[in-house]
Amino acid sequence: MVRYLVPTYARRRTGVDPFTLMQREMENMLESFTRALQPAAEGDETGFFTPVVEAKEDDKGLTIEVDLPGVNPDDVSVELSEGVLTIKAERRLEKDLDEEKKNGVKYHIAERAYGTFLRRFTLPFEADEEHIEATFDKGVLKVFIPRKEEEKKTKKIEVKAQ
Image: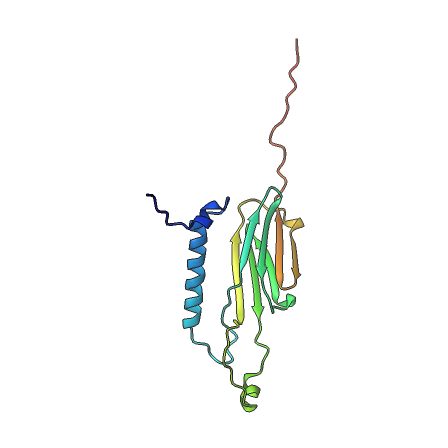
C-alpha cells in the first residue's frame, strides 16, 4: 500500500505544486509568529508591516499586485532604477494615543500593523520604462511593467540567382 504525504485534494489540482503551497503556509506562520513576539511600543509609527504581494509574468510583461488596505495613495511610491523596482508605502497611525489614555480608552485586541513597507523586485527582463503603469484601487496597488520590445534579431537576406 502506498501512502502519500500530500493530501489527495492537493495532488488533484493541476498547475499547483503542493510543496510550494506548504512552504508559503510555513512562511506565513513564521512571519505571524515573529510579528506577535515583537513588543508593540505605544505611539511607535516606525515599525514595518508586511502586506500580501502577488507577481505574475506573461508575454507582455510583469504585473505586481500589493494589498495595502488603509494606506493613503499619497503614501505610496513606485520607482525603477537599474532594473530594480522598489515599492514603498506607509500606513500611518491615525489615533492619538495620549488623548485616548486621557479618555480611558483601553484596547482589548490590537492586531493592525502600522509603519513602513518596502519591497524590491529585480526584473527578469529589460523593462519599457516609458510605459510602466501603477494604479491604486480599493486598497490594492497594481503595477504593470511591460517588456521592452526587442529589435528584430533575424534579418532576412535575399539570395540572388546568377
